[in-house]
Length: 430
Image (cartoon, rainbow, N blue to C red; front, side, top):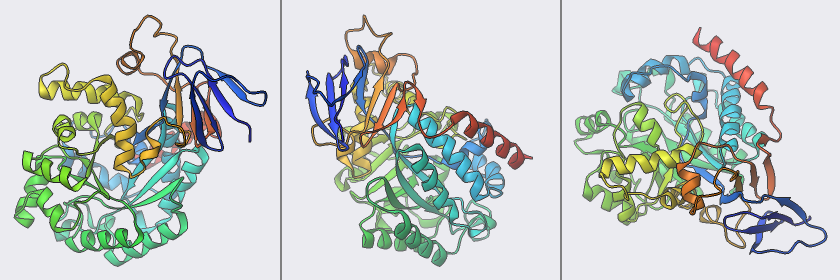
């Protein structure tokens, strides 16, 4: 396999890779057999890592726009319950394509809606990820606590616990390769699952050496649910379930005390920060600065397109910076390099794949080339990139394979994928 050389980047310089891994960084002289891609003045970063998403929600963009979380969920549950596996595939194909075009090379999808107990929904998400060509952390989500038992989701959307666990075993056996597809064990949230499911899911995950993921501390309503049902705040209930550890990362983590943040830091439990989604449903301002000061790994998440209609990852870096500055009332609460770190190395640490987050010799060649033609007079290219206009990636490489070229997705007709999704969405809403 020929070596690929990205030549002329303004930051961090030339990069060569071969066989899926970075081989050289700096001022590199081309060799006769190199595939040389001239990117004069552009910027290279490590591929962005999306630590929390619900790809199926591309089916329901633009609905429930004035609702808080519980209102939003109860409005959308009935619609999601009508989805087919083909609908989920259409949504996942568009969602993953849009992520790739905004520089994402690794995406975590938390899928917990299994209409009619058809777990083929997980197979089609993997199929979509392979078509787009980016890495997938497939979080096998689940709900087993319906309204009749004190949960939030309708009874027709929850699964039997034994069925969930056996399906999770099947998904692991069929899809987990530890490289391009990583299966995650991921019961949905405290208000939609039983204690037994949380405990047994943790046991299953650790038996297979897999990571664990769930929603936690997103809203005050969730906190009140836990206090009423368990007599404990969500974090302490999480500890009781065996869900505090370095193999766990949590979505949102907004409403925590200083002691709870310290506890997560000591355990090495990570946070997927989803600033745009949190703003959309008025959930609150995540204490990102406190997390970072207490050694809690923090990555960025897009969350579903039903609560973040943009559906891309690039803008979440700027949104995270602005959100932190508003919360802390300090202009230096987070800096551009901090949020780039969250979008790359922080996310990689949450997922337990730290080699994916940095540009170092030997690391996988998961790389993004960003157009830099509008940044000529800016002294700090990262500041110009993060604070400047939203942009699509110019080139994207995953394990050395080019997935986006000159701003165009390779392997998927994005216009056709959007048309199919629109048709399916209209039928679903009707």
